[in-house]
Image (cartoon, protein in one colour):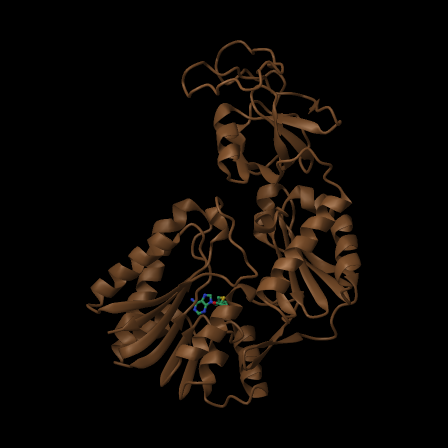
Length: 437
Ligand code: SAH
């Protein structure tokens, strides 16, 4: 912001408050005393260790102390005069240290929590966070070699995603601070995990919100000679780390894929199949599976995957799932097992009502198509539609279909995608197992 911009209160700019608060002093109640607003800065204020300092408004301090690891721009006391991508000291209105965070200049999310301690955020810091992330995966998924190794803020590494596919890593840098530490992170990944190659899959549009352009390519080592293979239960899957969706596969659904096999029987339908994460599982148990996928290349890979798994009871239909479901209802078709796992329908809050209408249409059709005793595995990866909204949508779809439905399981992403208490956004994936009465 321009140095001449007026203070937001409309009052003349007040001087920055000093470290006036006495230890043990009772916190001020909201609305008791007007807050001292600081003018926007042209150069950063430095803390005692030389780290730039960002002061929060009272609302921001309250939010920080309550736990959410993101602080929005409106909760900063003035523009801190930074470039973006810095590690900053976060202080309250009295100048007291709250913790350290990554700073973003362009995103609405200005600060992302790193630590409550006044410690250096250096190679050792990131090494420890990476080791901690790995130890969760070893604990929760012993013996596994394909999993999400780092799940961003939920692993205390904001803006960093690392997926492990055996000997290869596929990574995403989503905020400027991580982007600027790309070489350090790659060094640490090589030191700790000795991958044959690290693929950068930062070709995601959310980077635009941070002023970063999407990019992808080989970051370190060698590319895998072809798609990498990995097991999901009884099924052998393949992922193309450079060209596949996301980092190559939908690892968040791995445990749900295997779970779906357990429930599958009879005539089965998988909508939004991609390369067959659910469809192949269903085919290990059901009599016949129809997989519906709109993309030609994903459909072709799905056919290959079915063949290499010797699953001849799987038929791939390249079509729009909305049309397929409507036609199936009109034709009076019936199924025993259905999976609905569409892409995200809402990228922002304004799109929520349309997303909910989309989900409702899909699930209403699924209820109409299921035989009594039939199973519906239904998922949503739209984080703006939370679990409660998703469940309400399902209830309303069941009512419109005039069906009674049991909830058998309420699931989320796999255990390698931890959810951070206080950051609902990390619980983006909902996956319900329902049974028709
Ligand atoms: N179920 C998959 C992941 C699905 S991702 C798994 O567990 O691995 C969503 C998929 O839906 C993508 O492959 C995308 O190409 C496909 N898709 C998007 N819109 C579609 C539509 N209208 N009809 C059918 N498929 C669609």
